[in-house]
Image 1 (spheres, helix red, strand yellow):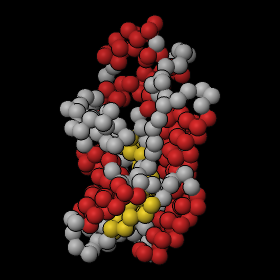
Image 2: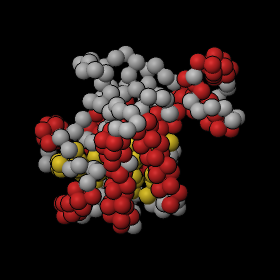
Image 3: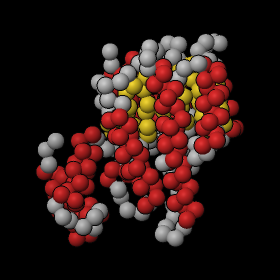
Image 4: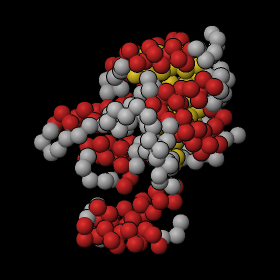
Length: 284
């Protein structure tokens, strides 16, 4: 039995950031497997639309429930737990997907606070609140926790320190959670999308998906494929960047530390040529 066994008819999924994009695609995947789905978002209007769309795909079962919540609020998490357990009894699949972007710089406290409170504490609160629920369900069924990260938290491109730091922290949190739950009936997975056409990354209001981007449904399907292989790291390619290219970029990035180079050499003018030539010659 693989980690993908969590997608079982009658089991229940809770997904944050589910009113659109990857979260909504994950909800559709769960729904297609006959699961009950709790979709969580702070955008009440979008959440209502998403709930109606999911419900229209089937009859009364499996059930779809929408919950308005801000993942940065521990009180909202406590209320969400009470509601979810009351409605469904057990939760087998938790996807901590909610996240925000934004631009800012040093001295802009609101920029750092907003992103870190949502992207980092949204995960911390989610795990702290629902891990006991998932572990209880794991006594009789396969369970999983999926946490959405970002390639920016691994390769760390310059220009957005708060977002990069938040996703680097999410990667670390997911790795520790996986370690702490090893040997249990709960699998943990770090979902790292590539360029995906979503509400947050749609590119300045573009209405049509660019050729290079993946659709959110492709990300959800890729996650399912990797969970069938029991893989923790789910590093999604897209139509412009292959898995091989991603690995080369990651190897170069960690090489800054290993080889004593300055940080972020991939983007430094004096290192760009060497970085490009080295990555081109690297065999994966």
